[in-house]
Image (tube, rainbow, N blue to C red; front, side, top):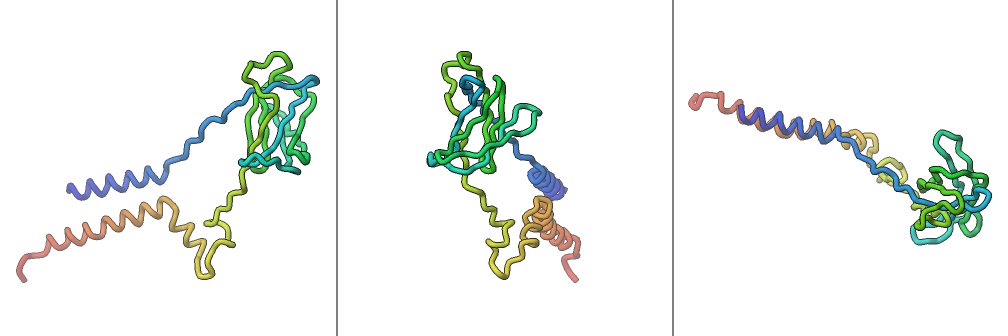
Length: 175
């Protein structure tokens, strides 16, 4: 009986572990000061600080539609005619949340320009056929890495020896 409870507890723990959800941290809001005329300026750079040319940068305030622009040779971009408020800035490889203040009202720590750091594109080898060996089976690999499949395999690996052990105890000692 005790081994059955142990197995049930292990199965429940594995199931809960497999069903857990990742918790995302709230985005950091950066204060920035708009220039005269409601101009928001910024720059797109790599994580090494190199400016990135030709990146599409999108801006949105609350439920308003996205407005886009492209970065110049120096990675710079600008949006004109904005009012104070919280804005989302996004590119295909990075994003940020900025609280824009009207000129002269920004706190002392407010930045003059928005800085959008882009990361290198993430290559997820487990889903990209270019990263598989010729004899590998990507669908089988994806199936075998699902939490419930893993939990079932572990449960089976635990239950079969216990069942065999219990079946051996039921047999008479002499034949």
